[in-house]
Image (cartoon, rainbow, N blue to C red; front, side, top):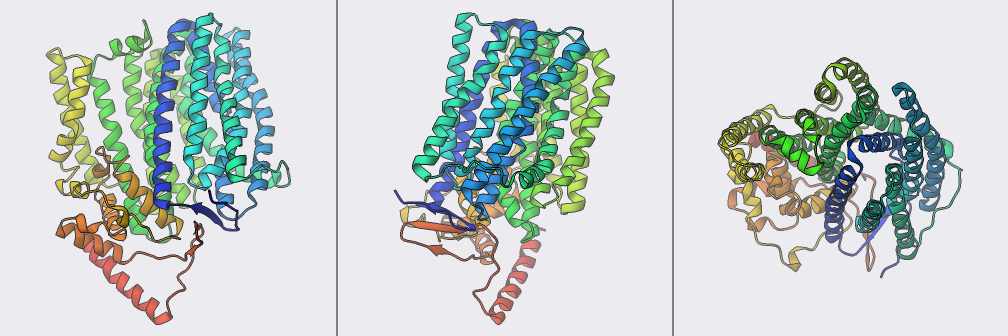
Length: 614
């Protein structure tokens, strides 16, 4: 095993970089899948065990704790990753951030108790079971802070270690939940299961960090002031976003019964699980988007459009299916009697899910363009709007009114976010692909409605929707048959998997993560639905790694044109390590005349590509 030493401005990566990126991305997908399955199992088990009234209290404490947890989190783990990759003292920045987070966790614990106490006063009764449960849930503020050590893995593209720790954590949590159910434990005890599981993740993570990477945090507050200043815009934006996304649940708990809170919280949790799929897409696409900002705006725009298209293609049929199946029966099979009352709310929230995913992606676009402060204003507008609409609709329409308010808030915020992104980053989604996607889903909706009328069950309708969706996308022109050409190739042999070492991180992620994961994570068949823009990037990647020989002649020619203008970066290698410079470096290897000629050639190629796209 090679020894890894921290160097200023670089991250050290030993072994096969292509395999590293693929394993990290695959680990994220496996981790997400396992966590969704285990968390869903425990969520449904707790709902059935507690009953609607007590589960409503559990939902309230859980949602409030998740919201308050953003105060110590404040995306400071991403700050640690950024500082490590830009040459900061790894042990010092890691220890500084964790100490600051632990201090914020103390304040968050007090705030959590005050919020629950205020809700109890607003309802006219204070439940000590809720207060005690909130105190147990607050333990996750401290465990989450200690788990900032995961930044060490993220900076090295070693996400498999984080996945191992997270899976161990959720496994222990699941065991604890079922042990409590078997013992007949009261509601508030279940809120300690998550932090108890995270203790296991802490031991696993710190053991790996110390033994494998030789790193231990330097516990100090030397940069506490600077860290707090960095945390304000990051944390405020997250608080506002989560505030208007979860405020409706809190409003339902205040203005309606505990049972209605349970019904609404149950379907809202299903929506949040669905959002995790969008997180995997963003994980792959955001580094590519960020790498192109300020370097190649055409590709920046293409990545944004492709990801926007993917969000609509993936999430719109979810809403279509929920509007066609017998949803009350479906919910009561999951949760138990009474939850069918949330069917209308669930259908409205499925529409909100589409808008919510787009809003979240637009915040990544603004972050890539270094305009993340605008996200704070967009989220603040969303929070004000959701408060007003909830006050109008919940008293009259209950949980259906809360869902309608959420859908309208999400739609309005999405429209504002798209306008802001267009004005400051000069990128917007393509209208043609959006319209064709909506037409395909309208045909799917009509077909499922007709089949539901003849008495087909939920499972049959879902299976038909899954099988018919891709042909409908092909029929409506959302997916072109030529996009499938990239998939019609044999896997490259060992000699074709060699990579030029030392690429600039943006190119590394574009070449390694996208090419490796497009044929695994995104090709089921999500790769082709990303649109022609991402298809072009895939062609370029294949040409760079020498795999364009497996394309048809037309695709090969286009791939070579796209790859001809590829930007090289400085490289530095040792016997068993590859050092990746994470900072963009100017091209210095060619003389003035050669640079001028290459720029002229790149410009003509760019014009040719624009004409081809037109």
